[in-house]
Image (cartoon, one colour):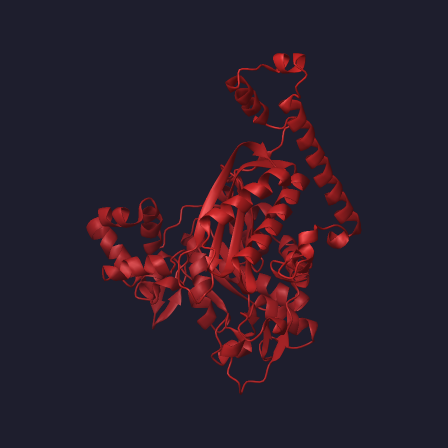
Length: 463
């Protein structure tokens, strides 16, 4: 990097690797504008569901409204009343289709192993080996990909360029939005020069409000301040943040050691499956129990569909926004692996009743199936070992029970679980063939139920 009359010139030849991060500008709003034949840069449009009332959060706001001072995710009532704008009902399936088409454009020029899809509208690229092929520098490569998306789809983008993924991300998040060509470029020197005094800290990737508050308590409000503290008293950072201090220190200096191959080769040690929803109104505790049971049953069917089982389920329940009290949280373990709704639903219902305050209305809830693993064929877990242990405690072996004409609890339990599994598989088959509403429980018809409405949503919004 060189400086000439306040102009930054980047010497890309000094970079070992080159990364590009591209973010589609106000993606959902841009898609809605394109669908209407309108320019997202000049059209005032918000993506929000008017049926949810003025308090609903807008999923996206067009760039032209942002330029007028409207924040990116306001509630509808926060948009100035004198503004005229289009309100587009969310269409999540449509946005997914657009994202897939844009991803295909990227694949025309960059191999999948050199791309990391960070979100529906944001992608990282390792463009190192493509620069010579296309005779471009990293910034030109970013501009080329952005232009291809705009000319073929109609959606504009911003981009960041850097010698590592962190700097590319920060260049996009902070620098690009103020650049006339919507492309930001950073190397480690430029990062220190341009952003060490930048505020607020929460503008930087992976620094949330709580982390920023911790730093603020000791008088640090900038990345330069973190770097200075690291040089002076690194141990304090480790006391404050544990192992995360290592990442904070690296990022304070613009360092990122993760490569694309690390991301592609990463495998979680454990997996989970979860559902969460924010209710449209305050629910009574009893109504909340209904929703928790619906969510749990849906997850059981999803587990059956993918052939997985779980030993443990956790839930979290948030109360009305007017109460300002902590969420109720808890978990229940079964002692064996299962996907049976007949086992999991009653256990989760009991957990809900035990951890929640029955006088408080509820507004948010989350159900998580933890440590899920593939189900072994024709083997319904160590439940039978547990039943054996119970039998032994009672002083009767299976053989003795048979001689005495008593029912074998193992056989009965095994048969019941197999029936449950067969039933869940049959329900899944019917729903796949005839639609999600082809079969449902009676509880799904109750007034407070949400399953039938959510059957026609993607990510909690209309398809």
